[in-house]
Figure 1 (cartoon, helix red, strand yellow):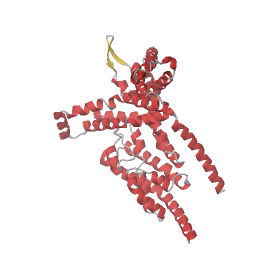
Figure 2 (spheres, one colour):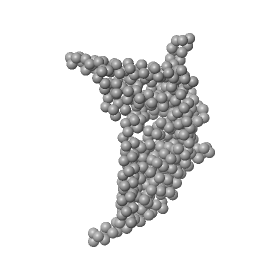
Figure 3 (cartoon, one colour):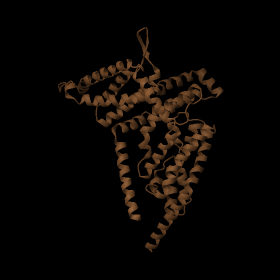
Figure 4 (cartoon, one colour):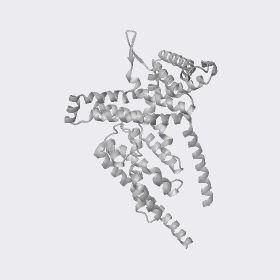
Length: 428
């Protein structure tokens, strides 16, 4: 009977791994995940600039105002997070071009042209006076994603058509040949998106950006602000880990699309010195699952099993930096029925508890700083997310995780001890 159950579990694992593998290997999903990760340095620069700009200390504010440093912080924010949609277009175009194995530079140029074609302009007395900044900030993220992906795909298709490329003699330098080869595809893309913009100007929304915001972005953000949507994603990520699939990678594209705009909105509100509008953000979901790796290390060090104690010693320092893979594969948690409940529920419970602690004011709302979970020291990360109150809260989360995992780790430890004893007896 146990053998039959093991065979069924293996088959189920295979099906889930195949399905998730296909999803992760999808060119557009990979482009979103890879592209958004690539602009993380820009987001970090803009985030910290906003923090330094808004730090509410009287002497500090007086100093940066008198010295002109505050204006520098303002400029940094203006050219990073305030024009986020432009970076999204470039990043996704570059990422998808790599997936499609087409010209990266010209894909980026095509996507930028297409995005600017459909971006609402400021017009005074019939004259163009500039782009509407509202639509190149966080409000334009979904439009930027759509245009970055579609324009790049269109460029790849058009540039692959020999009838639409201008072929130059072999004696012409390569950069000149590439310029002429991409000329017709870029011209056609510009014309196509200009027509799209004109057609949308005839609708009640007047432009594609307002239509996306009204019909897609607002409903999606309504879903995104839902605690239940966040908890489902957290549970699903850990459910994937049970089958040996990197759950965070599997959910990255969804997280960036649904939840990252709320981080940007909170960061802008923080800079403006007004109340932060959102609790459920990407930062909350990815950084408030609790110090799980540290909990695993502590529990392993308390085990009687030599294997688990050794794992605790080896994995303790990586655990302090949020790296949990040694425990997930070393205990192992993958395909271990005893680990399924605490693995899937630990992070989920911590995110839910964080939401309610934020709601009643015990801890501050996410300030929008994009802090990496893995690689950043655990309690330093907590401090960046919300100061000393958040550090204390992460200690509370650690206690919650220890309580959830303790009875299951006791059973795993007992099982390991029996296996070690059996091996010892066989060796003798």
